[in-house]
Image (cartoon, rainbow, N blue to C red; front, side):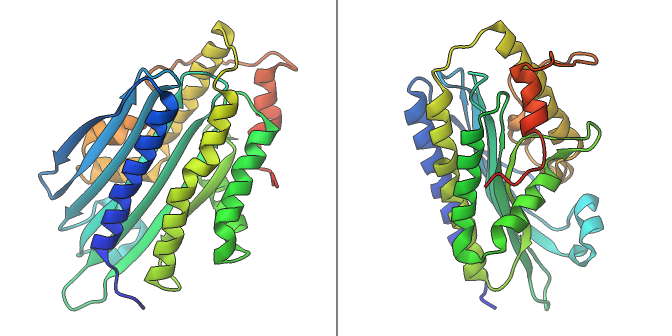
Length: 302
């Protein structure tokens, strides 16, 4: 098995952050990312970038982090007991985009690498990542495009990769206390360390570079659709589901907070505005109702 090259992985993550920020700024055409570089007392640091009040993107965060520690939090060792007593490094790029126009979907992407080491023992390492789409108003052609790109990215690595990681995404981004999906899925993978380092790294690079190929054409198609207060209020209501998932179920959020990560960077995934409404139900046969009946379902889109 190839020896993990942490410097190579880190350089890719930094360049990916640059690439994504550059293209999002260009598309928005109004606002720019502000950057904060930070250090973590326990070890490591990061480079957080947030764009606010854009013409297209109400808020977008694209973060790089590389954190280190002498021991892992209980949430990690409970799931992976073999990590107990090991020092670790966790690095990656995570992004969440909250558009202003309700017809443009929110999207999330993440690529990451983790390695835990102990003197005299073989390192434990893996890659993880993926991307998912959360529309407020559903368009079948957008979801088909999204999943077609995801499948195309996976195809060179095996016929079973897309269906496996598509199902994993559906299962992971499921709001159990609401009994509904967060969105229309995409790709999700974790604990990837076979067949070898180079193949796993190549796949992670492919997913990272492929995110904009999947997302930007959807933004271009929907960004100029007219919208009003009805659509805005529904968007803000549905953003509440995003908050609920990230704070209750997301393992990355939990790991970041329990490991002493930078709170502002971890919670940049939260939308800038959101609302909750007691016992909301959409009007029958409305576009809002169609989101629930036709899009927030587990489905083979291609």
